[in-house]
Amino acid sequence: MTEYQTVTADTSVYRDGTIKLHGPEGFAGMRKAGRLAAEILDALADKVEPGVTTGELDDLVREMTLDGGAVPATLGYRGYTHSCCISINHVVCHGIPSDKRLKDGDIVNIDVTPLLDGWHGDSSRMFLVGDVSIKAKRLVDVTYECLMLGIEKAQPGARLGDIGAAIQQHAESQRYGVVREFCGHGLGRLFHDAPEVVHAGRAGTGPELRPGMFMTIEPMINLGRPQVKLLSDGWTAVTRDKSLSAQFEHSIGITETGNEIFTKSPTGRDHPPY
Ligand code: MF3
Ligand code: CO
Ligand code: CO
Image 1 (tube, protein in one colour):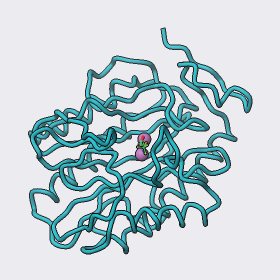
Image 2 (cartoon, rainbow, N blue to C red):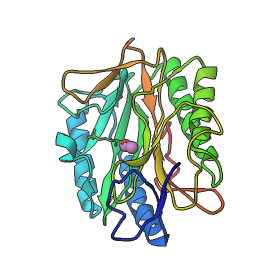
Image 3 (cartoon, protein in one colour):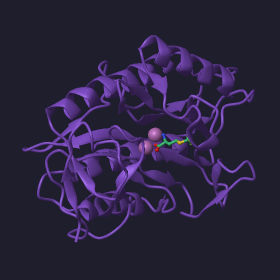
Image 4 (spheres, rainbow, N blue to C red):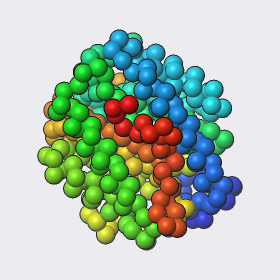
């Protein structure tokens, strides 16, 4: 049996395995945090170009986050010391910013999570560096479609498994691999909370989606096989077969009538070309 919990200011910070059902203050908080995440990603569109280092982009993310009155939730999170994750080409997720320079043809995911007034806005987008191959662009396009097809299934009364089933069906129809080792998650005052939002599975299974649930959907889709491996830095996940990988992430809330995307771009730059 899935347990749900209508949260109050006092209980919303505890990670007890229950699925939290938030009220209007939660929606207001997530709207602001999500908007800041989207604005940061919007601004990065003009900065991602050949020659820039991922460390320089991380500095920009930190400055924009602080300027927005937030702190980067990743800074100090489980020993992580950067303000965002930047994952290039065959890096699936959790790429660590460094002095590495972006080069023509790269596809890059930047994942930001401003923590604003106690609420987490978690979102990532893909960026194309210079001239990108048609094959890579198609992977990026299909991955964004996977995210949006998953979000369409996030309706009150639906089941959590409906989301993963829609994503898996679309990705596999293109012969792409869906990463299983990392998933979306509940969030709110907590960065990572119940439930786990897997990106593959069976429709009609899992907990029922109810108004007030907050979660991320963040499919990682590989041009080749779905398997990943972790590098020795303990963070960087790469495709085992070295194939390209893409990811998009939104934070959403289930409403009485559907869902609200907290991290939607206010300027329409949710996906490339920007
Ligand atoms: N933003 C990531 C997510 O979507 C989590 C990054 S945690 C870090 O859940 F420590 F790797 F930064
Ligand atoms: Co996330
Ligand atoms: Co994220």
